[in-house]
Length: 217
Image 1 (cartoon, rainbow, N blue to C red):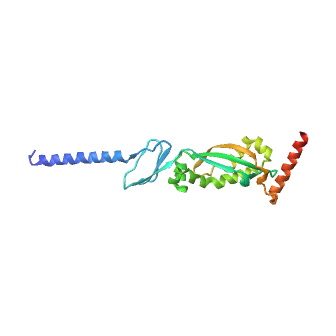
Image 2 (tube, helix red, strand yellow; image 1 turned 60 degrees about the vertical axis):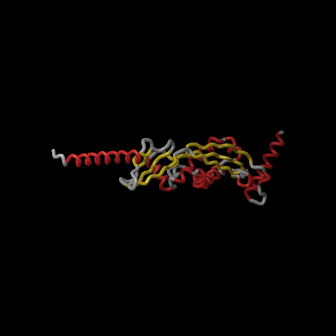
Image 3 (cartoon, rainbow, N blue to C red; image 1 turned 120 degrees about the vertical axis):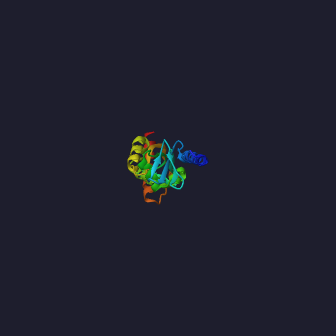
């Protein structure tokens, strides 16, 4: 072997080692593993992929990466006083219901949530509440109106089950994990408007029930 080629071979071997080291460093830097309760959505080269448990390679310039929050979110909805719900017998009820929901741990639902809501919003419980508040509130009002006040108070499990059924599964990739009824109590009559058609019926019903109770006593 010519002595003149030895320096060039040394340079070539050095370059090969540098390239291998460079690629190795890129792989280490590019490997992204989500924290517990999160997932990674990678888009770009080779389409969209979800990194859920094992992590995923995100190569700069070739991929875009976003984190999405899979942790349980709690949405408290309270209707009381002037905003209380109306029962079938027109008696109003103060209620507070806690909804627990999270994104389903399936790639399709994770991708659906990221598309319809956006990854960043999933970390903000206030924004998640804003998304579902109207729907959940209307469901509470609708179901409450199918129960008389006494039934609503004594059949909380049935009330809860019907809430879950009416809410359904179309929740932008979220799943309703639980519904907890914190309290149900009669709205004080002072918050009822006697000039309102429904409230006037409720006032009349309350007076009738009070008279019956007093008579029995």
